[in-house]
Amino acid sequence: MCDLAAIINIIGKETARLILGLIGVLIVVVVNALVLTWVERKVSGHMQKRIGPKEVGPYGLIQPFADGLKLLGKELLTPANVDKPLYYLAPVIVFIPVLVSFIVIPFDGFLQVKDINVGILVILAFSSLSVLSILIAGWGSNNKYSLIGATRSVAQNIAYEIPLLLSLLPVAFMANSLSLRDIVEVQRQGWFVWRWQFFAFLIYFIAATAETNRTPFDLPEAESELVAGFHTEYSGMRFALFFLAEYTNIFIASAIATTFFLGGYLGPVLPGIVWFFIKTYFLVFVIMWFRWTFPRVRFDQLLNFSWKILIPVAFANLILTGGILKL
Amino acid sequence: METIIEFSYVVVFAIVAILFTIAPVIISRLIAPRTIGDKTFTTYECGIQPFGSAWTRHTIVYYTYALIFIAFDVDILYLFPVALSYTKGSNIKEFYSLLAFVLILVLAIIYAWGKGVFTWKRKNL
Amino acid sequence: MHLADVVFIIILLITMAGALITVLSGSIIYALMGLIATMFGIAGMYVYLNAPFIAMMQILIYVGAISILIAFAIMLAGPMFKRPKEWTKPVKFISGAIAAIVSFVLFFTVVMRTEWSGIKAAEANMTTKDIGRALFDRFMLPFELISLLIVVSIIGAIMLALYSRKEK
Image (cartoon, rainbow over all chains, first blue to last red; front, top):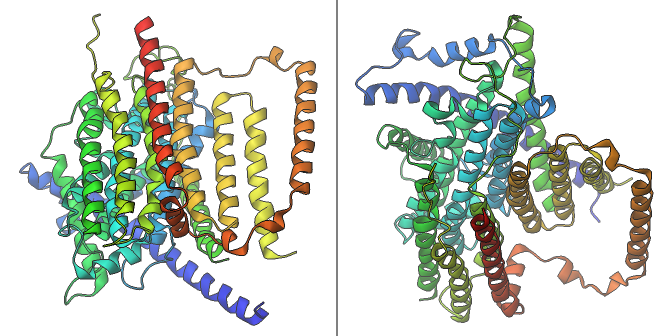
């Protein structure tokens, strides 16, 4: 076969890539969470004619650090009646899909940790772990609010998984690939939003909002009826981990939308990575905008909207795409 | 071999994710205060005494949705390899194949809709 | 030992550990966790066999869908917390062991006697794209029948669910 030196060379290259990728991804995760907590509060504030945080640092910019330090110093309570192994396991599992998803997201032409052939399927497969962690958290807490919140969240996640898959499929049909970088490269001829996939984009975005449990689909965490949903019993740093995962999931959902429909890192003049972050954070902003525009939906409306409207439209869109490609 | 290298990234990232969640909890353990009160470790139930355990039988009305979901999930995943080898501009047979596949699948939604799976009746208490 | 062998043994250990937790744990929800670990082990096995698409399908279907349904079923049926002691009688244990050994021996002999050399190298190197091509050409009818089969199963499930709802 090949000689030993070549193998060591390959392993060395891969290890370097792996370590650099890990450092980069961890920085993105932490910085993104810090930025989003600040932006979320500022945006919410200004949309309600308030000014949001302003005391800590200029424009309240240091606020997220203060929040983080506060959470670090909070007592870690473990209620007496919980199922201890499951209770401790849930915040650990919630982070696996978050980090794994970053492997395949292309930030720039070559800035990608590793281009896996079945890229998008890796993200989708591992995101089923976050559903699982919600279920474990709800079950392990032995709290009625947690359990009801968790079952709601799981029902919602599986209801919107189908439209999500169906909205990504037409793009895969057009690009003939599941690798995220290939999908971006195909869009050099034009973004997929404008190439017949506008409805797919809409469906994806609605489904992604639901998958990340954001308003108007935030029933699992409906404060007025369920306290805090599945993380009612979590305090201090464990709560912070759920929070961090939630914000990173918003980023990932927007990043996938950018990659699949908005041309990813493609754009004139500016370097690719800047375009990528502009598009992604614009979508994140739209998700925050939703929060202060739409009231929360009822649960039967939520489930039926997926099955009665999104899925039939997504199927029609898939057939149309299949037909157009044959012309 | 290529596949194993690709997925070794996934494994390493998963392990780092686990470490990443354990580290802050340990730091917090070290610096956070601890209190022992009368009701510190009781389950939160809006201030009243907790009433029984949450681990009981309870109805999940959405299990029919879960049943339909599994079937759809399995089916749609078959379309992913199909998407990779869908030729453009020629071989119209593939389109008919796809059309038949999706139309048969849509029958399931129509059936469920007609049977009233998606209508929630108000319960008379 | 080759590096690939080490990977294989680790995958095997994860699968086995998950399976043992599933069978031996007294709490049904832990058994579910064990089952999920097993599914990940099997997915790892598919990756090892150079079939990443099948591996991802394994996780998506078994972890993302089937285990969720099992969890719902546990909540509906009432979570039995600890398995009652009187369930694990020695008679049951011995008969279970006999069944396991017999099926293992059967499976082992069948695997050992099969001629594996008949498989061509090209078939062993199928990519996801080839699977799609095969679904369009060679397995056109099975491809349509998958859809039909699933529709029939959905209809059956809905009928059963609605039937039990009416009985209440």
